[in-house]
Length: 145
Image (cartoon, rainbow, N blue to C red; front, top):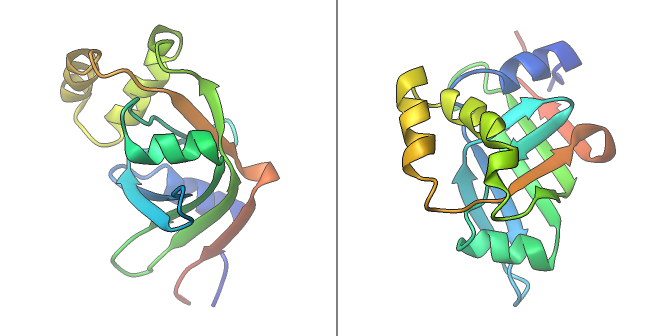
């Protein structure tokens, strides 16, 4: 099946509403997959685990992740990423990256709703994580056109 060009990949990753599934490894070695919001910018996939999420505990212990970003309709594009996630900003440093969090939320909610969501959840501290595509294994695919 055809691969996406870098331009096609970047355009797909910029589409509003597309969810990402992040896979991490639990302490017992079993996988844990969680659908989350993300943002693709500056050559990286950015995401924000909440401090108390199970998958963030797993990521802290083992930074290896697999990401699946796909769509349920034709042309069935998908981007698969495997690599190591970096905790760019620790929990409690939200003010340093709140604008990026707003951009993430704006991919899924209307502008005003996104701002209200970000402001309304500041009592739920998060970290900011990223995986740089250049240093990760990236595979893409789409239906033939």
